[in-house]
Length: 489
Image 1 (spheres, helix red, strand yellow):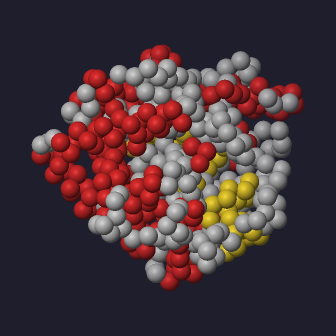
Image 2 (spheres, rainbow, N blue to C red; image 1 turned 90 degrees about the vertical axis):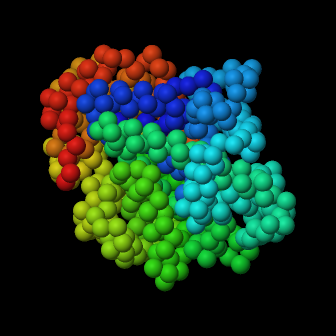
């Protein structure tokens, strides 16, 4: 099942790694499921997208369960009293971030005054083990705080990386950011261990690109295509496609692959190593970018005028293979897929993605129709970038709706579950269903609309919506199509 933790129920405006997350794992287990897919867990920046975070390594501290901090003595009942009227259906990120940061600062102050030896020891161990990314990240966030959240290239001390020294007055701020990262990963690994013990593996998500306003670029400018002033010369995107007539201009900096390769892909090895500890399987977003990426001059306003630039993806994955052994990767191979992308995916044996919503309205040769699937693939009724299945169906023209009903042999009155059944019945080795389809929700529950600037990543579900009946229904179909046991292929 596909569900980002931000969408979980909870009292403080956003999902958390607390009780509701454990309840969701219990639901998955009782419903005979084997995987929980999440989106990137990194701290979100502009636009609140988990695909454009401040770090490829750090965690989103807004997901820290505040109730758990109260149980461990880092917060009090009084601390948790508030006058906010948080919505249980949509996330107001501005309010949520301010509220959580205020309480996390209180937790840090309580920690500094406490004699909690176990926590002190665990925090010290975390800092030592993760210093290769944690030191830079915490300094980056401390300087960003001092500069009122401005992009790093506009910070008052000038452009480029400013090394931390003990004389800097933000030593305490740096320690604070280290501490809340410790809290996030402490809670995350406890949740992951619980899920694993209940037969649930976590599928994580790795965006190929990082945000310009990130510690990754600030601390490693040589790895990216920047000019001598630290500004991007070219940015990432995709040409015109299903989602946008003018293409998608993502605005992420492109990698300087010559430098990456010359240092034996060290940054990439570190990135994958940490991610493989935090999740069980990795979905590589925009996999085609490892064969060639769409390069657009930074001054362009749309993504139409760009060109494909070759990427040493084969060399990268060979290096990763020699370092880690078999790679537990899924490849998001959607969009303009050329032979070199297919060859790269097949060379390393990564399953590709099939989106059921893309299957209809054409002819029988459509690669997204289930009768054309190969075993080594992952089928989704829809992804986080799609409408919900119910919302999608309701917006189709009459001819396409007729094709859907004819192919699925259904009336269309229960379309989300018709799509679920079709996905589970397919030959794909893994079927992933967004929770919105399990709940038969319409377009208002859509997670992301590519190309739309605001209003994304906000959806949450209510506790009472995830009923026992839905779990029984899902388990029956899962058992019917022989998907109750995890394969090791």
